[in-house]
Image 1 (cartoon, rainbow, N blue to C red):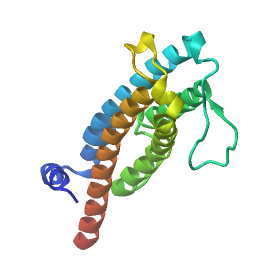
Image 2 (cartoon, helix red, strand yellow):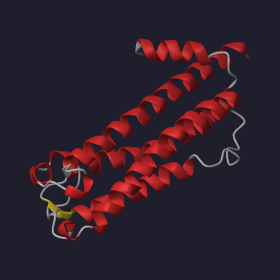
Image 3 (spheres, rainbow, N blue to C red):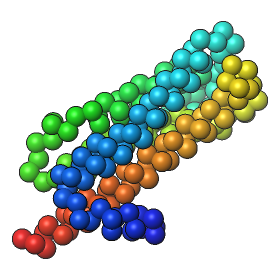
Image 4 (tube, rainbow, N blue to C red):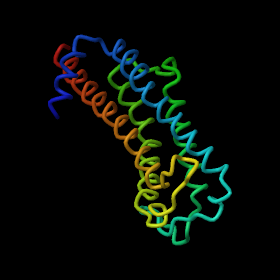
Length: 181
């Protein structure tokens, strides 16, 4: 575990898992996801509104069985749907019925991680595509779709840092509670 995680974990070790859920999962993580959700929605709306994006396609999408070019607009819709899914997971904590808050934390991490990983895969495909690196979008302050994807991936990286930290906390708390019983 990195030093920053150890330092952050030490700061939050005094929190009970219930408070951790409130402050980190349904606080910090939700805030990060709101930023991701907002950025993706703005970029998707812009990409969908531009007539020049109608014919943009990615030639290759890694980690898929797709052998045909995929429309940039379709990928942006998929990224947007994943952002909505991840953000919706973080809207309520009343659905956590477990008697173990550390299991609840791990459950939320799992549910958020799946769409986050999909966003990262799709954004990586855009970021690595030669056509997406060369096409400049004047409406996006002259950014390329690859640059937009890179920005999205940076936000996803930040979300993943919180997810990794929360996982470390949940595992630490689970070990601690087993030693107390």
